[in-house]
Image (cartoon, rainbow, N blue to C red; front, side):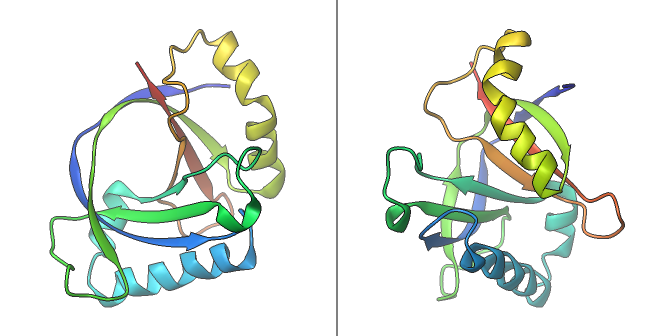
Length: 153
């Protein structure tokens, strides 16, 4: 599986969180709601250039499903600290191996099933226990993609 190396900088961000089982209908609805919020707040250009990032904040093998935290975030310099629909925070950048995957259930499942082998085969020096980021930029067309960003040393 091909990948590229990307350095992400430090950014201000806006984010929302759902607590519950990963892959739940609530997480899918949260993405729809976040996209609407982005549109209504005129952040389409930020979404287009930097993408929406999704982060699973817990290991579902170690954390009960009802306690798993899933965040969606967008890098922006605008201040939304007074908006009760979102939270503000800081993102600490770093070095990432970026894998591009067709955004289908099968392709994403295959990525997760083979991630250990992929890391090993490519001799990636990853940061253990750091969350893998998902990035979504493409919206239209039949070939929707997502990117998986694996933090590296």
